[in-house]
Length: 555
Image (tube, rainbow, N blue to C red; front, side, top):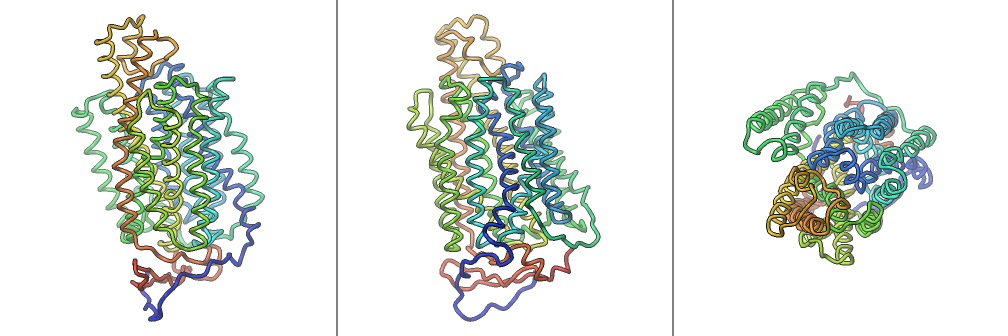
């Protein structure tokens, strides 16, 4: 990017105005399929979350399998996100979104037919590949329709859809599991996926993007996938199937690091890199990535381990578990919608993001006090605080990165945030799952030893790391298991709290920039890559300015 001399006059935020090319109604019509696609992406994880204990028990899986059913989807989502993002800079974004929906639909149908945890994990990978496309592309397409200044408002709508999907998923999954079977959970999203495909075809109209010769970085894709997979497999299986210090660790960790280094070298020299390394020269991008990792751990970890707490420490059914998660969704829904509008009306985002990160840290710390006796109203307050924190931070991290990168890197930049958020979530669920398995196993063993409880043959299954079926246990054994999961989940949230504090520090170090006033369509049709963008420091003085390059100069 070229530098431009900043004007000497005192700068101010650009006035809030609508995008000239599309009316509010037209934007909402174009977004209808996108929002339904986002709803499908959320359903893919939340509709199963409350049913996972039932699923794993029915398929005779272990705690490791429980973790892998979640991690496999996150792994596929994480690995595929930067690929989808790069494809969005090269090919039709509408076609790519529809392709992601189709892949998700196929994965869901076959996941519902699984006869073992191995089959289920495989088809969850297919689901994850499709969801990776939706996660990366929805925000990219939104950047085509709406300017950064107005995007906060519409991101609030996406946040609202996220909230509805988050609350509807566990409720729907719980009801379907209790009334029919857990297998039906995987079919619930299929009608929504088909409806999203039809809506996208009818309502989403994007201009054709001119591009030069395309060189897809397949080597970079393989290196990144290999590195992420090696490290995530290690953190997922260590302490379950092999010790942290073992020959498997000696192979997987150096392999992951070596592939990561090779990926960096490849991306620096590739003609059209999958993840452009020059993006990391932008301070906003680097700090947003750091914050996204912490947000991913909080978001995915809260959903997974809260479900285990409610069902295994409090004895709730999947339906009850879904209902009890409503406070977190309400907090996320309100914060995302209200703060999104505030960001659009004022152009200011940093103070809201810092507030959100502080609330997220506080909520996780409060959840660290959980045990099997915590009152449900108290738990509801803790969840609402976490939800509000996520609502203030999550969508805005994508917004500020999109505001900082040039238009021809919009897909790569947007997917970068989603990539590291998913990576943080997958790593966090795996590591925290290992902590929980170790903690509950030792607590259960100690409880049996001190209480001398007869378990009617269930001791071996509990000691083996399997997810317990509370209904099959005696009253004494059930109390020991509930206590183990109560304190174990509390410890997991306590470990996650300092990570959210890191997100607060990263956001505090951001320099707030005025949000741009042109949508991607306006920029492309206007023949420019960007507009003068003044960066303000904390006092409002001009720090520097930037302008984009001609659109024709990009591939």
